[in-house]
Structure formats: C-alpha cells, structure tokens
Length: 116
Image 1 (spheres, rainbow, N blue to C red):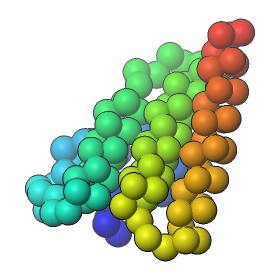
Image 2 (image 1 turned 120 degrees about the vertical axis):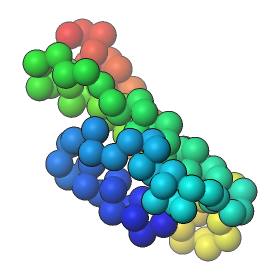
Image 3 (image 1 turned 90 degrees about the horizontal axis):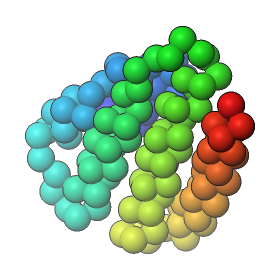
C-alpha cells in the first residue's frame, strides 16, 4: 500500500500521469489483492492511472483539467472503499469530506472545460 500512496503522491506533485501505469500498480501490489478492500483499492488505482493517461493538447490549463478530473475521481473511488470497508471514525469522516470536496472540484473543472 505504501508504494501506491507514494506513486499517487508523485503523480500529484509532478503532474506526470504516465509515470506509473495500471500494470505497474498491479505489480506493486504483488500482482494480486487479498481482501475485498485490497481488490477495490487496486481497481480504483488502475482505473485512475488509465484515465489520467491523457495525450497532451499543448494547452497547459486544459491538460491540467483533463488529468486532474480522473485523479480526483480516483480519490473519490478510494474514499468510497474506506467508507465501505473501513472502521476508523476519523478516517470515515475524512473519506466523506474527500468525496464531497472532490465532487465539487470535478464539477468546477467540467464547467471550465465547457466554457473553454
């Protein structure tokens, strides 16, 4: 799990969606997932990485939005795994807040895309 979190942080900080592929994520998890939560986290990361693999348009603002929307959706999907399987009240509250904030930001980015 540490490897996935590191990869997600690197992608977030550097904005380089092609750093790690969905297959890399699977390999970092040992090629398998144990619990239902493990499987759900792996699936969410693979989907996010696949969807962040956007061909650059040469327009920084547009590329940022096109890559950040799936990144945010990945955060939502991971937070929903926590809500489904997690037990810690503080983390469940954090996951709820993440879903709300990321959905709002995705809506803002979609509105920006529609205007631009």
